[in-house]
Length: 380
Image (cartoon, rainbow, N blue to C red):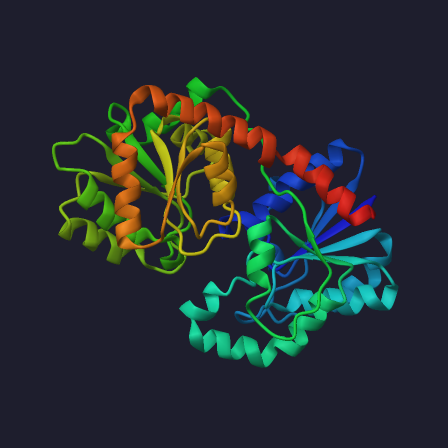
């Protein structure tokens, strides 16, 4: 099959959705299919060498909506080359453009909302929610006319029904995932230790995600200060890009809490250093207020690391059911309790939990199985 994936941005620092697209494209090629990616980025901002398939940058787009009417010309000229089109994400111009081009060409299109219909956003950002309600008649048509709206887990599907009305879509849950880490684990640990020698000889918890209020970063710092006494050698590694300029405020909070020697800020990690951070940590922690899937959660489990997450990470049921980590609420009390529970877990049980995390990844979130699930959806 020739398959087009359309996303607002193909810049990898933008997080999970584009990483999922990239990983799926690699497996699709291995299976003999021909994927391509289109995005609304300025061509100067995209690195085609980072992808296993052609990437078409159709921008530059304008504003937070990523307004890019010029992209419609390319879509109209090319959409008939494909057996199916998949739209990744909502509330930006690429969805409207894909709907128009695909319907004109009678090519089926599918939509991955990637958690963007979660009602949490309406509660957290009421002014944005008002704008979305005004825009909903347009966005609803994108969803309504898709051959299927693809949800990455049952929790996402159920939450999506609660955000806006009317809501008439053809729903389908397909597995989502990421790839097995490649490379030598010992060299990866060494690469991380060389980059951050202050963590080489001490236990640490790893947060690896965007530095963003949605991710619960401030909650994590306060809970760490409350749950880990000063004499405990455990450190906290905060890894990820600062996309909203919040890190300075968080660093001041860490100093106020007396954590300046116990929190290490690494910026965005890639390659061996990233995998070395996963392999070297005691556990991975993601205290998000909203997380559709959490690619980093799956990556941690792929490395055999227990995960400490909230019930706002939509795969929490799978993690809890498989005994792959610990789960609690996205509140100050919940995150503090999560860390205290982890501290009390005996070493032998931590090892078993890591083994179960690895099994959870292989059974549920490995990218090849997830890609076969996706192919079954777009072929039906």
